[in-house]
Length: 505
Image (cartoon, rainbow, N blue to C red; front, side, top):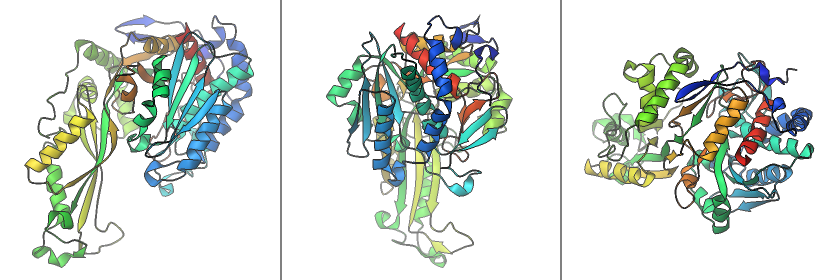
């Protein structure tokens, strides 16, 4: 088996920080700290157990939307933290599903915080080429051997690899160079509706305030080995819009025969009409009243970073990976990336009304539901977005359309000169990995609970390795890389080790 041990196998590439700088491929084994070889040796010895830890975790799916295995999932998360060496790991109740708060006091001068989620998205086994809870090892062309399963990359694989770093350090007799605080939740995939109750608990807030920053483990190396260092993430609101004959006062209160459409109103069509008012005719730009009132344009620095990313990126490969032939309005790649970073969105996740099984059923549905997500950019807020959507619908006579908020949070921003971001860049540099500063991740996570007052922490994503398929069938996480530019699980483990030393130094 190829353990991908030699980091010098990585090509010498450039780190894009305004100007390109050629960086040496140093490799963790050649690092100046003489404890790294011992940690590497322990990580290699633990490799099979580290892989099994991910597979075992995948076998226990905690799905908040289905209320599936939530008590078992939080207990499992607690045990994972304790087994990795945290001094304490407490299950923290909320008005929803509980979280975990863990601390490790290493007597260090600096503290690093880590965000985990133990919940995963729903799945349909019929859509998968390998059973989604089996955690089978499969071949991924261009990358190597990977664990396939729900949660493999979002987020159990990267999170378990960070824990593997702690196991390796303990087995090597090395104390981590930073104190650690971990906060984990079980509701990220439903918009983190109660996570603030964990973060805002006074003792947890006091501990988090001591941190240099907080990060979420990630594994986003592309096939060239390059990564993005995100300086922020979009916010999100997840919600349902529901049209019903009962609430409207028109149309049926329950499904009736479709022949009656000639004299009975349709809640399904009413929902479609309401949805049509939310976007421009092409569906690409939000048309909610005053939606762009507080949207902040890209700065000159952000545009510069996006231009560098476009120049360094592979547009054709990205289109192929996404399965798309062209961008909105046939935009050039750089302008498409600018739109990705700067534009809020109104997206339909799903539409459900009436009968959707085989054949026809000739009914007039009494109820129709649209699941939406609204992505937000600085300086929008979740509270503002919810209020403007409600006012928009009411103004157009759709007061009967029920709006059920699932969860959400504001956008995040982090200074590129913060210790966290600079430590991430230094770690990638030492690994010989090309890292590009990205103004804003188009996806979302509850980082705003850390970046906003009273914590005001730098927050971001970090990790070596590769995985894909989050929220989709055939999700995977590479553990044995055959691509010399992409890390397998051992090198990704050592990446977290080095990040801690960079924070400490």
